[in-house]
Length: 133
Picture 1: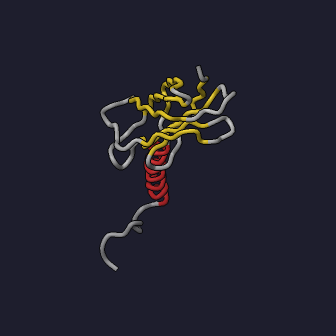
Picture 2 (picture 1 turned 120 degrees about the horizontal axis):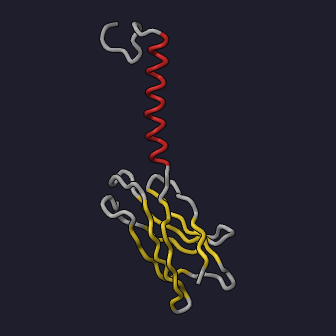
Picture 3 (picture 1 turned 180 degrees about the vertical axis):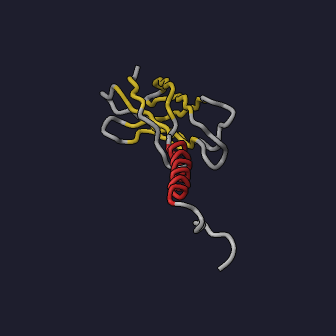
């Protein structure tokens, strides 16, 4: 068989190990960079007519439609989702950015909530613990 082969037979074992290491390093770095969810930088909340309005500031290395922060959620400490704010487009040149959501119902007696962002790859960022005012 003639032509180009993915693993040339003329490479030595050390060269093959080096090629494997380089490929694994490059692919691993891309996966790690892509796996980080959005980071919540700040949260503000206020009660409005029995429900709450949350303003959440996120940062995320948006690259365009292929990889961007696509939402954030407010969660009770027991894991119950209390509210979700979808984000409809990338924010490549607007970092960090703040978006708000009204009408979030917070159960009586709840003193803290968790807020976290998500990207369109399904990766969730770390939870930000927020003490309700």
